[in-house]
Structures are given as structure tokens and as C-alpha cells.
Image (cartoon, rainbow over all chains, first blue to last red; front, side, top):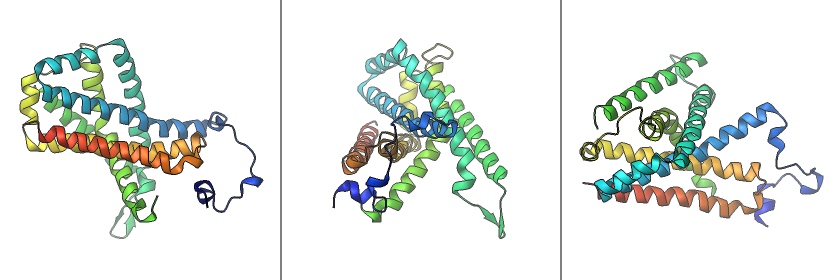
Length: 139
Length: 116
């Protein structure tokens, strides 16, 4: 059995119409879904930047200064601006989906969705403030 | 993908998504935009090094780098399958995605371990 037929076990290929690779542009909900999935690429990009920063920190003050200078180039300013927008989109869609992913019960009663979402946003605010405080205090 | 590790991969995806959602915006804003655009002055090399000397800070950075990469691996895998219709490359894509996350996790652990 090939990998292909395993993935599509109950869907015989010969009954399916060919779908364009751009299927997700035909409908706003689909576009939103694909953009949400694409946020992961920018998450990975910033994780890689952080790894790079860590390496520079380990190599010494000169390497770290060079890292900071590289982040100031137009290429990285552009990439980081786009990354910021996608990461924000990830946060918002992630928090808004939280009550659908995890149903919280308190004394047998389901906690309303808006409470779960609200708690997520509150945690976001508090943690962002804490990180900002620690970093800005001069590390 | 063996069925037995599917729950683990989903757990890593979910934990990484939460870490990224809560912490990435503020870090991208500070490191990626505020400092390079000159809105804020960059913390000095010495002060960042002294911050990282704290084991809690290093654990934080490890989680901060590793888990979101597993989140990426999981999401990107399905984006490639469904978005680009690459279902025939299932195994290869899975190995590349999770392999990258595992490699980056090992690198982060190595760098942080040798950071003292």
C-alpha cells in the first residue's frame, strides 16, 4: 500500500475533481484559515532569530553587536514587521479558539466562552508587561 | 506517522501554540522592532549575559525556542499536505518538519548549557 492510498483510505481518488492549489482564495473563511496556518512559518522564523541571538551572545560582545546591527538592516526590519503582524494574528486566533479546544468546567457547570477568552487575553497582557519590564530594566 | 505518538505531537503543538501566542508578540516588538528602529535602547551585552546567568531565564529561553518550533512543525506539515496538495510526500515532510524542531531544540539546549 503506498503512502498516498494510506492517507486517503476511504476516499477513492477516481471520484474526486481536481482542486486548484489556490482553493483557499475563493472564500474569505478559507483565506483566513490558510493565513492562520501560515502564521506558524513566522513563529518558526522568530524562534530561529532567537536561536541566532543566543549563539551571538555565547560568542561574545562583538558577535552580539553584529547581530544587533543585522537586525537593523532593511531586510530584517521588513521581515520582523511582517512577523509581528502574523504573530499577532496567531495570538488573537489562538485565544479566540481556546474555549473550543478546552472546555473548562467549574462545579459541574461549563465556564462561559467569553470568560476563557478573557482570561487568555488577561494572561497575555500580564506576561507581555512582565517581559517588557524585565527586558527594559536593563536585562 | 505511528499512531502512538500522535497525542504527544498534538500536545507539543498545543503547548507551543500557547507559548507563541502569549510571548512572541512582545518579544518580536522589543527585539525585532523597538530596538532596531531606535525606539528603545538595546540592553548592554553584559546586562543580557548576567540575565541569562539565571537558570530560570535559561529555562525560559529553552521553552521559548523549542515548543513553538514543534507548533510550527505540526501546523506546517498539514499546510503542506492540504494547501499544496503534497499528500504523496507524507513521510518526507513529517521527518523534515519534526527533524528541524528536534535539531533546533538540541542546538538551543547546547547553547544554553554552554552559556554560563
